[in-house]
Image (cartoon, rainbow, N blue to C red; front, side, top):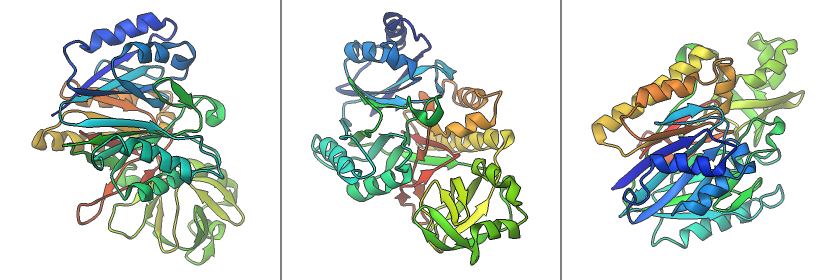
Length: 387
């Protein structure tokens, strides 16, 4: 059995008051089983004012997580909130770890060490890994996920890149207990009878353009040619003018990897004469289709993911939900930035314990035709796991 308990506070300035509010929402003395761990996401100021440290010192379990712009639980939602999910169980064991510092020239070894530290605490391979990865300008989240997937042998990984409201994300942090870092990945491994089920929804079908194309030359995350045309010439062939190229960095495109998994939504980070730099690795032979994201698309896809998840939970039973949508979705629905959180809050209500927090890059498996979970990195996507 896995028990899920959620709590939240918007009290930033007074650490003791914030702790008291959290403790009112969780029964520390009677509500915990043999094993427990806390997942925390918070606005950066909760670290500065000492609220996170106050929780760490007074909660009787380890605390792992990251900064996030906006979060929600059964108890409320806000763009400036600290949210806590407690996972507790007699049968499931929890192992936490945090990597050494990650840098462009030193990525693989820290990821290996984070995995090794956590795995060494368990008697066998975990059934789920929850990753809190740093958002970095020179190392993509997709690369970190691919290496971690390779290291752990394809075990299911769900998680996020840290994020915040500052320019260039200079206030984004990951943390484990008293350690707070800008360039380290924190991992939570769950061992035992845990049966996660993953759901994703990125863009409305009505917003997907009909012109499908084939990547004919690429180099990792850089698309060079599409349909044997340079990327800019390909865009011209579908009616995109050169003077509008800058706006494409706010538009997702769907990537079909051709391996039996559903297409993935990814972002274009920059467009150069030589090609386009993308949010994930794009191999030659992949199919791509441009899409659009707007208010209706955000709300429709949130409803779609939630509908699938709640239907699954009703038919199969569930203990709780972790939802991680892309932070760009909240920006695309401004000035109503909290509407997606409200939709989630209203949809789940008191049916199940849940926590939602926004992401700088979503990590969530997709299922292939055989039903095997394949780890994928996403942009613009509403991801969730039913526990």
